[in-house]
Length: 110
Image (cartoon, rainbow, N blue to C red):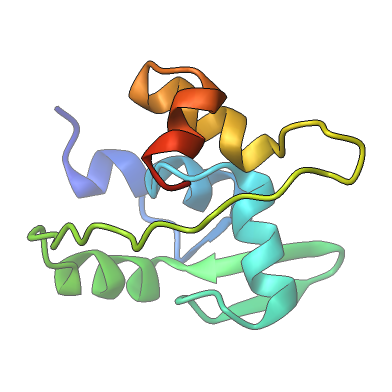
């Protein structure tokens, strides 16, 4: 495994693509978060490039808590799209559970 010095090679800032890779995010996700003001990292522009300070990225990674609480979602009764077709949410939920949409509806929805 690479050390922090090997990864950043003495740089003070990295671009959004590299930050996304290091955070295991899709670059588009990180760009969307920046645009919407939801990015946990401050960014700045240098010419046409959007950059993130390495110190801010390291600070964010040090503060991450590995424990994740899993909470079951409340069932939501799905509706058809108006033509008798199943909604995509119903299709996805049924596929996740390994049952048909009809069986999902009989159980009480998504």
